[in-house]
Length: 92
Image 1 (cartoon, helix red, strand yellow):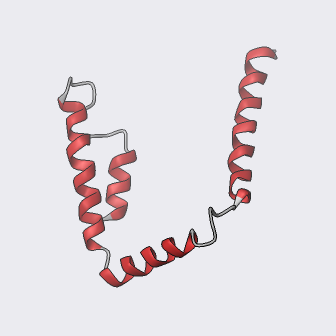
Image 2: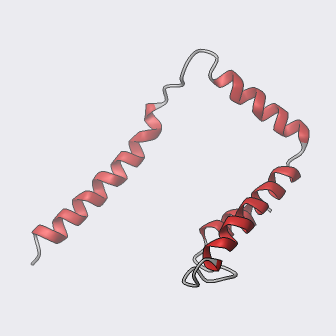
Image 3: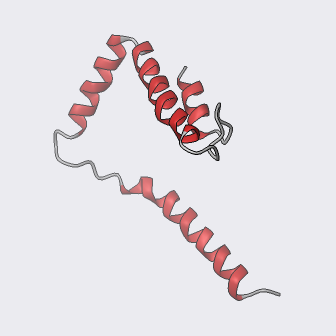
């Protein structure tokens, strides 16, 4: 169910196309939260309680500092910026 929720939220295909005024976005405002709710209800209580405990303990010693997770993201943004600048200013 979680994969269906993620797939629907990220999919460019909707039940009602977004170019239809009001109704196009209304389906996203109703269906996506409903799918998230159903997905959360299907997670076993013991697993949810364990994950909440781990999340609570994560902040026990202050804000976590895991800057190394940012390295690949910064690298991707710099690479994209380089490619855009190269295509704009250095056309052959």
